[in-house]
Image (cartoon, rainbow over all chains, first blue to last red; front, side):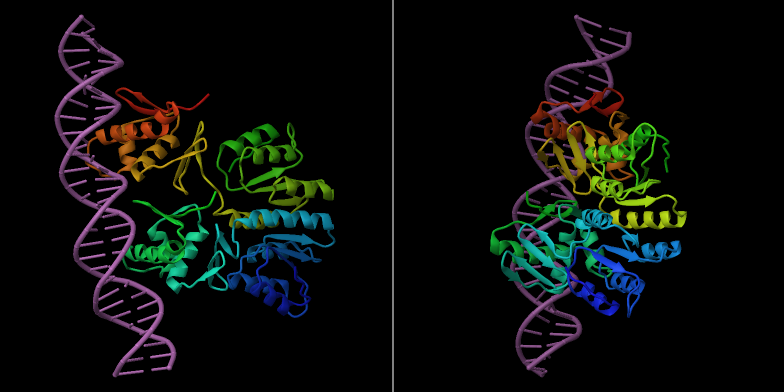
Length: 198
Length: 198
DNA sequence: ACGGCCGCTGAAGCCACGCTGAGGACGACC
DNA sequence: GGTCGTCCTCAGCGTGGCTTCAGCGGCCGT
């Protein structure tokens, strides 16, 4: 747990580190809670945010939600309620956007751009990394080659889906073959699926 | 959108249909909001739930969250706030919602492209999967071969309906024969029907 | 009871789908 | 300018899935 007492340092802390949840006070020296939230979301940080405030103008509250807050609490509040709401946020957010993606002993850290299988680090090219990230974000689900193309390549990329096959091939050679594992299964005519353990 | 004015009918509506979000009042005739929430989650329904109440005892609120509510609003509240909170819920829940088709102990998950009978996984080819999905989406109803052809094959497919017979055969061998069950019945001269239990 | 029709199934060919190795294009860096 | 790394294309190959077809069995109407 980490506490920041002013806006800029809070924003920095939330952007850099990996947190399960952020409790954000609107009245802060330096930067308002709104601005922080805005910048956080703009920076692609999707950590659940619970906003805290003494003001209770309803439009402020609505604004906060539309800026990307996940919950909102008006002072004075009881600590019991705060904790319960945090638990609810964690539960809902848990599977939504983990900052470190994990499938079995395979870990991918989007922020640090690193991949590990157990303790050994695996170096991937940007493209390989993108494909693996997309697969891991949808572990257990089926993703089509076109899905991957759209998400990893340019939105309006005009190439063949064969590139995806090629990159899945590269990935298998880096994350599976050396370890005797099998993480990406092919579903003929459908796409690929990241195998979840268990 | 669907509105229920008492507990039991609300529970039924939430369990049966597919909704993006549930707004649940605690004070309801018939069944309390707590009980409904409890049963909903017990039944495996994970639709986001926003609870609504006039009481504001803090422990009630904490309880609601731990029962599986995703948000909580105390009367009186403004409509603007309610809408903003609903948007926040929808945004967070968007990709988490699983749609799984179930007929008896047979389950089909379109997103994960998986089929289970009880605990055993069954692997199907894309065509087999398509036919089974169509049948299960219309469980209990009569489906003609031409229906299946049009829905699973290309819209303007010029082949014979015999393919459908062949694929129903494949399906029976995979989802029924090994289990001694009988899920797809033939209606001579009409089509097929997925047998609903009960 | 019998003939005709409907649906089931096993076999077999064909096609397309996915994998891979080789190689060229492009840019960064020395 | 040369070298290295990355990205992408292409063609060949093997295999799995799709489809067809013919023969058979059973259901139904007469």
